[in-house]
Structure formats: C-alpha cells, structure tokens
Length: 555
Ligand code: CTP
Ligand code: MG
Image (cartoon, rainbow, N blue to C red; front, side, top):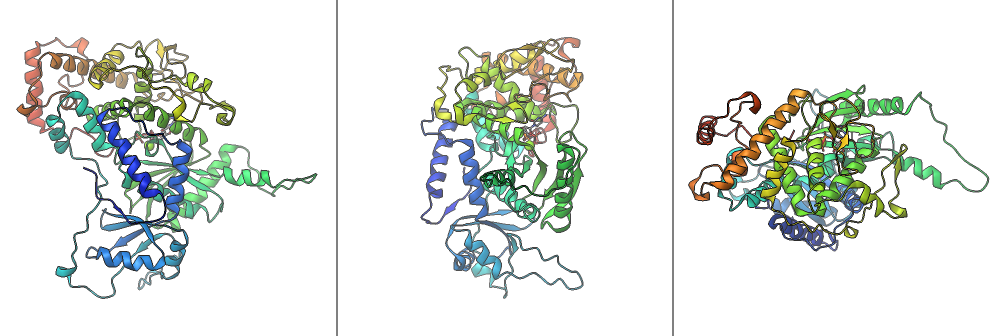
C-alpha cells in the first residue's frame, strides 16, 4: 500500500510525473515489461533538485488542522504537493509551485527568543510552526495521515512473504516494501538542499548532490544519505566568462594538493553545520579517511548523512547502477533480496569493518546477471561502445564514458524467473574461485586477481581499486557458506514446498531466518539428514521468534 499522497492542482507537470512513476513502478512489481520511456539520470537529478529548492520543512504542533495550515501557506503562493511524517514530532514537507513563495514565507518568519538562551539567527527553510491560541482539540483533530519513513517490521515482512503466491512474488513483495517511497526520496533531496543552503554561505554557486543508494535505485528505507559538495559549477562559470585576448583569474589561496583542498573545505563546512546548521547534530569530521567526509545526523529527517567533496566518480557510479537497475525489472528485486539476506545473517553491518558492503553485493548481482545466458545485463564495456560524443566523460584521468540514454539499450531476451536466478546466484557464488578470480563488471567476466585481498571486485571506473579491499577471509568464508546453504534450502524446497496457507516460512522467508549452520563452515560439519536440518530450521524459527533477524535500518 502506498502511503497517502496529496496532490493539489498546479499548472506544473509534477503530479503527472508522479502518476507516471507510480505506474512504471507498478509494472516493475508485476515483473511485466515496462514500456514507458525512461528518464535519464541527470534529468531526474535536475528535476528533483529544482523541486527541493521550492520545498520547505515545517515542524508542526500535533493538533494542527491540515486545511487551515494549507490555507495559511497558500497566502505565499500555490502549494504543489505536501505530506506529513512523524519523527519525534510531526513534520510537514511542503512543495510550493514557485521558489518566491519560500522567500515570502521566510519574510514573515521570526527568529525565536528563547529566554536566557540566545539563538543564532540563521534563516533556513526549516521552520517551527506554533499555534497562537490553543484550539478545541476534539473538533479540530482532523486525522492527519502520516507517510511512513521506515521499512516494515520483520514480523510484518514474514507475514507478507508467507502469504505470497510464489518465490517471484516474494522477491517483488520485498522490493515493494523496502524500496524508497516517493515521499522518502523527496525528503532526501530536501535534506541535501537544506545542507546546500548552509554550504552556499561560503560557496554561493555550490550544489550538494545526493549519491549512493539514495539515488541509484537500490536504496532501502532507512539507508544513509550520501551527499557530495559539488563546486564544479563555480569552475565552469569562470571558464565561460573569458573572452578575447584577456584571461581573468581569481586570486586564490593555493594548497599542496587536491586532497588538502578537500580537507580544508570540508573542515569549514563541518564547523558551520555544527555551529549553525539547524537540526544537524553529532557532527564528526573524518578528514583523514581515503575519501574525507563529514558525518552527522539530520534530526528532523532522521537521516544519517555522509558529506564528501570532490567525489564526481561516485556520482558516476551511482548513475551506472541506476541504469542497471532500470534496464530489467528483475535486477532491483534480486539486489534487494540479496541485501536483505546479507543483513539478516549479519554479513553486512552498519559499523564499518571487515564485512561485505551493500555496494559490493550489488556489484556481485550485476556481474552474475552479466554471466547468464543470454545475459540479463550488458557489460560496462558494451555500454561504452553505445556512447555518443555527448556521453564522453573523463574524470581525473579515468574514462567514465557510457551511454546515458536508457532507451538505446536493447532489453534482454532472457526470461529466467527470479526464483531460478536467486538459487543460481547462491550456487554461482557458493562455488566461485574467489582465491584466483576478480569480479569485473566492465568486462563481465572473471579476471585473474591483481592482488591478494580475499575478495576482489574491481572499481568500474578507478580500475586499479578494489571496492571490497576491507573484506577479511573469514567474512568471505561466511558469505560462501551461507550462499551454499541458501542454494541448498531453495533446492530442497523446490521439491517439497509447504503450502502457502500452512503459515510456515518458505522460499525467501526461510532464507532470511537464522542460519542452521551457526557460522560453522559446511565442510567442517557432519552433514545432517535433510529432515533433521528442516526440523532444526523450524525450531530456530520458534525460538528466535524471527523478530530481530532482518535489518530495518539498511546499514
Ligand atoms: N563507493 C565507492 N567505493 C567504495 C565504497 C563506496 O565507489 N569502496 C561509492 C559508491 O558509489 C557507493 C557510494 O560510494 O554507492 C556510497 O557508499 P555506501 O554508502 O557505502 O554504499 P551505498 O551504495 O550507498 O549503499 P548503502 O545503502 O549501504 O548505504
Ligand atoms: Mg550509502
């Protein structure tokens, strides 16, 4: 069920876009071929960014009257869409039709006086609404419907999975329940836009852009918000202004390297967020990391944010993943299930460490789909051959060129079911020669490992980097053991499946349950007869209540 959405009439096309998006995601859910033309990544990014700039975030009193609230706001111009959500209080996200309405609203807003405390007068787009007179609650308590920003509980997920009609239906159900909603996506772009306002105090032409799972179509409700401070627009602007024989340059401060420049910029932005950023708490400056970042919580949205700078390649890899996710409706369903499976078995974690990351798992699924016969996904090298002059993109000497128009890539002729693909995925990686081979989505085939890390997945653009360098041998072994076990469970089940009405976990639900091997490699265990293993499995369901075994926060 989609959360409530209100679309007030506006001459803009956003409402129509939303409906179209809803239709196309509907198609993805049923697995049928989606024939609507697909938007380019850059088009989506620009539209969403512009939309976020016309949007405000308002902390509201719980007894607010929605109709009166909208009437009050519309004094500043027509409201295009709005929704409410709860996160330690009631919040409204309100998108105006015009940007001027935001300024108009800011002009009638006052800076609070807090008694003995003093406020830092920062005029942001994050407001606090108070009621002047207390209203008669019983008559005014119109039911405000809140859009849900978190993923379903494990219990609800199991119920949904157990009632599904087939394993394919289960994978699509999981996708539908965990994928970012329209509202959550809007909130992510709005949060970036609010941070951009802070950064713009130093760099007026900057952009703060989301990347990673918030935009690559593989984000789960609750996943972190990766953003990067883009100062390239400033550079471009000066380049265009040169004319004739004169070349004007800004007087600037020079620092020893690009890295030092990034560290200095992030250092002041971090300080600024910490000191003045409304709703930004727990600001940590992690400037000595390979990719320097500022980590903080944005309280009102509930997002854990990682702000980086000078990170164009990561945005390009987000675009590539977005393309792969859009090419075939099976891709996202499979990635979501593998990510949830990994989280359920603690193969991934919200704490950085020697574990596999969601990004690596996504690459593994893409690679696996490139290896099917016929392939479900094309290789990156093939996407490069389809590129035209405008697609050409070199970042810091790395060739990041690939075709960006999704409609120029022919759909795959492969008709394998999700059930088969999931089983084969586990079998494929349960038997992969990780000791010898590297995973490479550029060529779509195994390569000899160039270095000795247990797991080697080549970064698609910075090809000398291994995106899973952090993974230890024991974590890889745990992945392999669980993959084998899951393949085995699906294989056994295929023969003797409990009826969906029996209320017993089956298919994907059985795979998300705690492992019967208890992390002891299968090779070291005396194999028990199948009947006993199934009995153990059922016992473990009963004892754990299956309550805490799936991730709800995505990291
Ligand atoms: N990235 C990368 N190399 C890595 C790790 C990350 O290029 N070794 C880039 C990827 O583009 C990735 C993004 O940084 O998508 C964000 O990283 P992360 O938050 O770890 O992954 P997500 O894809 O956002 O997944 P999650 O939902 O777990 O946050
Ligand atoms: Mg992320």
